[in-house]
Image (cartoon, rainbow, N blue to C red; front, top):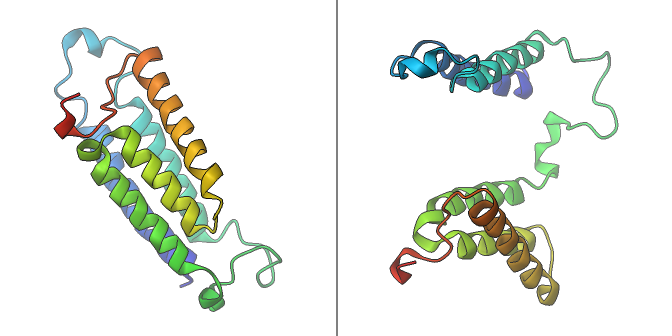
Length: 162
């Protein structure tokens, strides 16, 4: 079985567990007034799990494949060493570090750090442009979430008390 089908099988198993949780366990503790709503908190997870199961089944059954070998621009699974797997792994590690540092380091520091380090991994070397753009982007997102949407998002590290 090809690599794309193995990955689709793993995603299918995850989506089946997610779908089971969405269909059978998420709605049990709902308040009575919420049970009369047309859209429940589990509606989006249900739709997402059904769509993901359909997509993975299409990949598993090979319905998306055309005839012939890999075309220009497609990934050739027999030559994975030619791709920049190291960069992808570092970016995944940065995403995990960002998620873990979001509360202790605060939104602004962790977001600026993630954007700057991610750009450096991808090859950007103009720090005089990179750092201000990352700071403005993080500050803008924080302002929109905090002030416009009214959702508290800790901007600074927890030891600063803000």
